[in-house]
Image 1: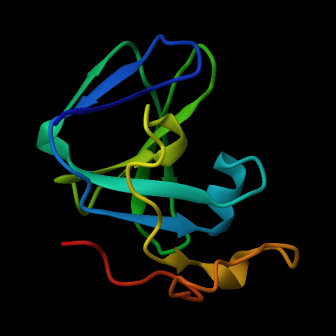
Image 2: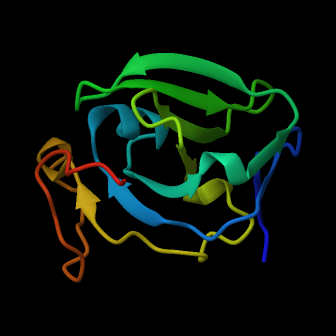
Length: 137
């Protein structure tokens, strides 16, 4: 079954013809910026199963892990949509909030908990990691 996602204004639409590989909640400082102060939930899909329509603007950055990253967002409404690690071009992370069905998969781990603000709540039923964990294959 294909999955779909998009931005707030509808200018960008994403079709994913694969099931998610994994999902993580991330509290790294960059994700806090992307999440407006909270963590982000990022769902991993195989890149070659994703089709995007509409313009996506990209911002290059270096993650707290040291990975060179590209962050994709809608240039019209600013919705954060994608994260791509240059070292793993076969994987694309889509923000769970951009999915048409944000309940498709919940986070399986919470990462970068040491960077979270003191008020952050971490689900006790999920494994917690103070920083980056090994990448998804």
